[in-house]
Length: 41
Length: 291
Image 1: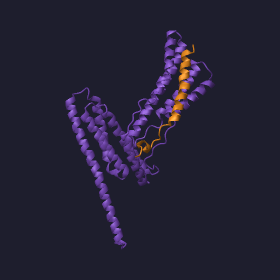
Image 2: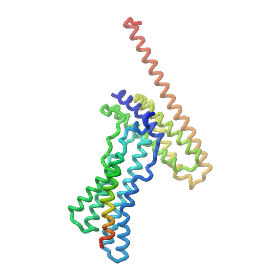
Image 3: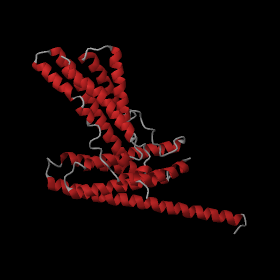
Image 4: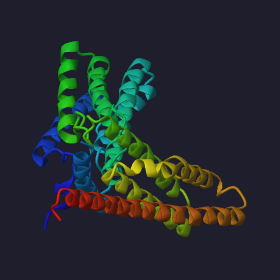
């Protein structure tokens, strides 16, 4: 049986590996900057 | 051109039915963007408590930018989800909220490095770029290729596509208003009306020549249903419920009948057209001595 999602005309979400890397990068940039701002003074 | 576009459209519609049957609401997607900047909020509060206005303003402005970015991203994700479920013809605005959200995340990150941390522009740009890349990998930044159910190189196909998009937008507004109505029976009636409306749109998409026959449906009835439903959804909690409800129910019953009739009329005209085409073909064959 076909996976219904495979029939969609819109592109799928980014692959899992890419999403995990994206989250790591967000932690590294947004998370790190916010934490540094908290402890910077 | 129109017929090839319509054939493709038929496939898309069948796919659409499958897609609409498997809705998965993105409940958690995008929430990380609300959580990650929380230290900025604590930083702003501590700075305020310590009487350091400058630090407070720096952290608070960064936090506000991040929250705006997270809000836009969540709305963008929800909109994309709705489009998958309900939109076959109606187009989304060209500028995606998610794209704006991603740019704002990068801006907020750079802003915090510059203002809260007091670092140089180079470092701010580097952090902004990393944040943008992270956002892109996690949520997707660039607009998706536009979905085109029709071959829009043909002027008539463009006209049909525009009419269908407008009509579908009206049906979406009816569905949105129906969600605000408490009475389950009226809600179900509106759901059926929207479904029947979509069936008529799908039929027009399969045979764009039906657009002319259905113009009253598209121009008068859909508008009427939308206005009445929206009005009822706005006022039914305040006004005399019973009388209003009875009137509204009467209107919905009529609308359902009209939609059924419209659908049947389009089906009948299809059959009539086929009859005429067979007759013409038969005469042609007879003329050429083939039958």
